[in-house]
Amino acid sequence: MNVSFSGCGFLGVYHLGVAAALRRHVPAAVLAEARFAGASAGALVGAAVAANAPLDPCVEAFLSTATTVRSLWGGAFNPNSKLDSAIAAYFRTVFPANAYRGLRGRHHVSLTELPFFRNRLVTDFESDEEVLDALLCSSYIPGFTAAKPPKFRGRYYVDGGFSDNNPPVPGAARVYTVSPFSGRFDVCPQSKGHSPTMAIVWGYYANTGNVFSAVRALYPPDQAELLKVHHEGYDDACRFLSTTLGLKLAPTVPGVAPFESASAAAQAAAAAAADVAASPTPPPAAAHAAPDLSAAEHRKHPEARDEPDDTPRPEAGR
Image (cartoon, rainbow, N blue to C red; front, top):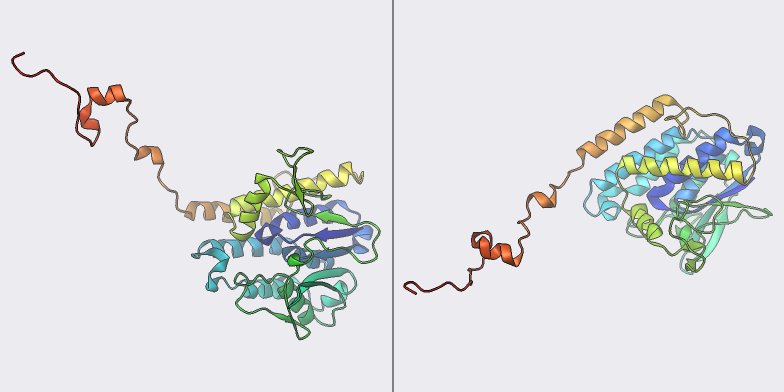
C-alpha cells in the first residue's frame, strides 16, 4: 500500500481521520510495509503514520494550534502565531526518539526548492533533526508559517505544495491519493454539486465547496468544525477501504472513532464545546432592524420613519 497526503493547512485533521481508519482497519502487516508521501500538513501526518506515532496527540496539537491562531488578529499571518514553533513542538512531543530510522525510505516529503521552485522529494534522513527540517520546509508559506524561509541541508525551501501538492511515492505502481478537497482523489469529500462538465484544476473540482475549504485551511474554524472534518476523513477512508479495496471493516464504538481512545474523544469534545462557548456570538440582526413598513404603512404611521410625512392633507375650513 502506498498513500499520498496532500497539503491542506489546518484541514490536516482530515488526514488524521484517514490515518485513524488505516490504523484500525488495514491489516498491521500491510500497514507496516506501506510507504507514504506528503506535502505541508500532509507531510506532517504521513510522517506520524510512518513513524507509528500516536494519533490522538496529533489531533490535539492541530486543534490547540488552530485555537491559538483564531485568537490572533490576522490569524496565522500574525507574527505572533509562530507556526514554525508549533510544528517543532508537534514533532518533538509526538514522535518517538530516532523516528528518522522508520521514516527513511518509507516517507517522502515534498519540498519546493528556491529560487527556481523545483520540486524535490526527500526520504534519506540521517537524523531526527533532518526530519524536522524537512517538515518545516515542506510547511513553509512566506508570511504565514514564519518570517524567514527554513533550510534543509543548507538550501532554502518553501511549501512542497507549491510544486507538487500530492507527491508520488517513487517506484510505486499505484498510489492512493488523499485530500480534504473534492476532486479526482481516491479518498476525498463527496462533491454534492459536481457535474461532468465541471472544471477540474490540477485534479480539484472548481466548486464553491473547495473555495470554502481553502479559506478554512488558512483561517481555521472552531474546534467543533475541525472535529467534523476529522470525522469526515475517517468516514471517507472507511468508505474507500470497504467499497474500493473490499476490506471487511472492524466494528467501532460510536462516538469514539476516529480516536484511538474514548478518553481522547471525550477530551476533544469538551475542548470543542469550550472553544465554541468562548467564541463571541454577534446579536441577531433582526433584533436591531427597523420594521419593514410598506409605503401604505408609512402613510398610516409616519412616526415610524425619519423623513417627514408628505401625504397631502385637506386645508382647514374646507
